[in-house]
Length: 263
Ligand code: SAH
Image (tube, rainbow, N blue to C red; front, side, top):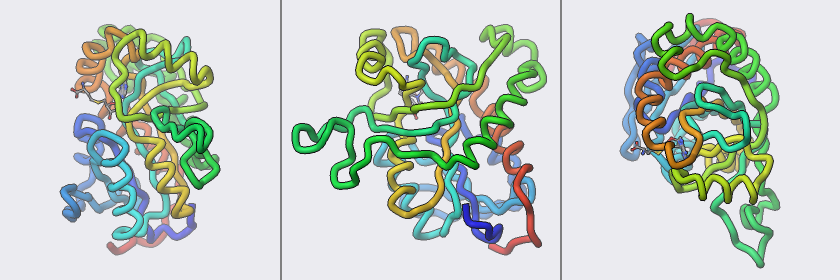
């Protein structure tokens, strides 16, 4: 990440429920409307940030990332929100911090190897190590006390007694994975995939093109199986936004601040 605190850090989520609490914490925010989305520029923990809802899916996420580069000159993008757990033990309420990201629905074989983004030579795009390490540390700290983070009722309702942080491969595609057959197929094809969502790998690709650091931190809202839809809806409204705010806030607090930046 560039050392200039005067360039904003982008915080992106796909849906309003995932970012609502964080947006409420930005008192000096200024709204800039570009290509159908509102970019909220302001300060959090003394850091200049741009917060935006990308909307759901890879193209929506890539468009948003491109605007963040071209219009706001961001120095890093952190994607937050929810994902479906794939690997055994990646349970509802856990957090996944991506080390690498792959588009599970991209296949230009036999011209290019399956999953490879044509003409880049990459299938798995690396997340920024320093940001990801720091996110994993703050997430582990927050999850060590879920009652303080979420309150007793939510912890009981979702049985979040011992939530864990996982690090590894996050896969993205333009599909809400909500059948056990589909998640089993993904597990077979990509045995090291921890979780599935619909935006991260697209943003990772854009960040790779621009040479801007990227990280993704996702809370597991469902197991991408036949029960996914019910779990997802309840979890997102009760938990997702609080998790996102807590992790992003704690991470931003670890960064050095400079003289107040001007927008
Ligand atoms: N049925 C939901 C669909 C939302 S799409 C609704 O009606 O609102 C799911 C969003 O959460 C995407 O932004 C994606 O990144 C993430 N996500 C969570 N669980 C997922 C899963 N099982 N498969 C794919 N994306 C998932």
